[in-house]
Image (cartoon, rainbow, N blue to C red; front, side, top):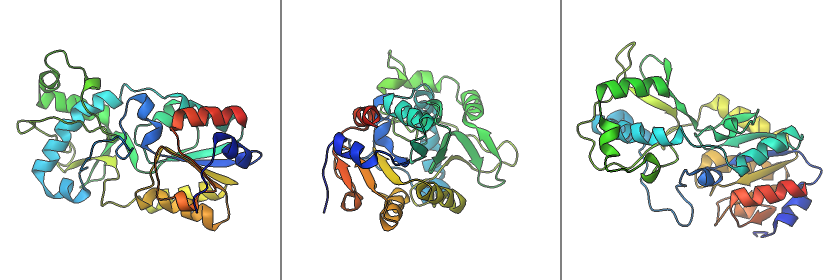
Length: 279
């Protein structure tokens, strides 16, 4: 049974308890990064790990779109929802954040304990030699290989913010056949964002740290995620199994709703702000 409630209900449940937060794309929408699965989101077909690894055309298309989308995510800023969680950590209420986002906005807001469950948009790894480079360094190389590409996409006064940008720093561009991706400068191998794709597993060590963070607190607060994929839902299941209260804040249904002690059907930013005022 789903226990729908108000911000006041959530505050009364969490009062006097330490909390681990689990966040998703819905917490970053007010920073200008669209959500994959909110009720008003258009349908999307994100690239799978198998497509990226197995098809050079998919990789070229991905890097072309990412090269434009990355410019946008790089310029986004934390919103009140991110800042509230950082403040609650300073107040000793929030033990840390497990985020399914790769946008680093929790870190930018000053959150000290963050587990980037699905990786970080600002890092790139070679699938052959395992070396990592910064996304900004790769951007310089892609600019050299594709002079004028970003400007051609944005021709006519369109800004990066006007292009549809997805949570993984991907952007929708019609024609990418002439784009030249970069190989690893050390071994010539395939470069991949250090992001967990659909069809790829979250590293075990990272999952174990996240479980430990859940179990270190008295309650779990879920904000801005539909919990569609198991990588996030498993932490709700663990908390519920442990008898820890679970508060879910999300606009629309989530797969974790049956396990929630309180479900607040509302946006993450305004709800977290109101919640912090009551704690």
